[in-house]
Amino acid sequence: MSMIDNKIGKTILFLVVIILAMTFVSCRNLSHNDNNSIHIKGSYTMYELTQELAAEFMVTYPGISVYVEGGGTATGFKGLKEGTIDIAMASRLIQSDEASLLADKYNTLGLSYLVAKDALSIYINKENPVNDLSLKQLKSIFTGEYKNWKEVGGLDTDILIALRPPTSGTHVYFNEYVLENAGYAENNVSIPSNTVLFEYIQDNKNAIGFAGIYSPATVKKCLISGVAANEENVINDSYPLIRYLYFYTINKPFGVRKKFIDWVLSHEGQQIVKKVGFIPLWL
Image (tube, rainbow, N blue to C red; front, side, top):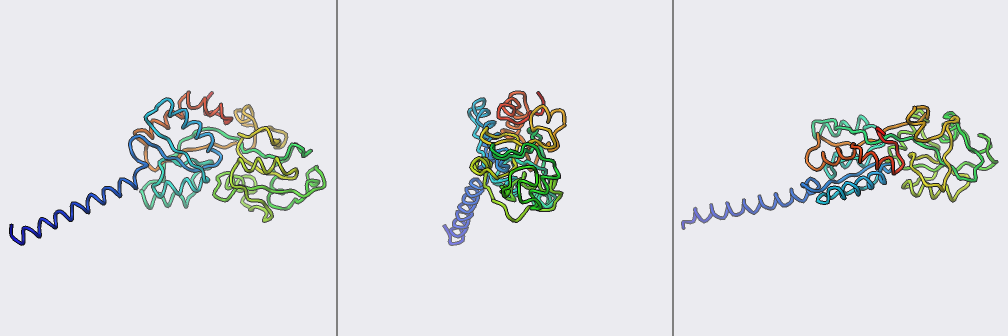
């Protein structure tokens, strides 16, 4: 073999090694897009719901693995943009800056799918004598204008505001629709998850917070202008804070991702929505 042939052979071998290495790295980076796994991340409100949906789906389709992670709606959209997840859970619509990032990278604004209906609910301690608050009173409480429960017919004690972090879609939704973008009171307690929120309210008689309709019996759900946050009032549209819960994907789903979303929207999937405590899209 000539020296030239030897150099060509080494060059080809080197290129083959580089291609194999790039393929290995690419496969690792796109492992969430293999044929039998689905990675979902986002809304705290939807976390337990989606876990239940995933568990039942995997019983029906045992060859498919579904991984669910919380972190907040904003975190879900971030994961979608970075390509680390297949589906984002969202308790609000995508915002213009989030859609712009998807458009810049993927030339798409993303696709949304209605999963369930929800009533954003106000939670207080069971020993708190207050049972009913108007939207105006809620705005005054959460912006810090009202600082004492006696200002809304309660005891002469300070109001403790418990808030989900800004990455939470519920945090953003409440500021937009109840506070009219006035912003939250600076004197508040940041709570990392719905579970911790309910525990905090249960342990603090003066606390108030908000979350989705699904909740334990350890806290009290406050009426809003005399209307309870329940399935009947969501269906007849009498409750003032009704919203939808969403799945988002970058493009039109196919394969196991399409199978999962279709199953969630089926009668079987919507029965799980109802069992967990949210309102199905159809009964």
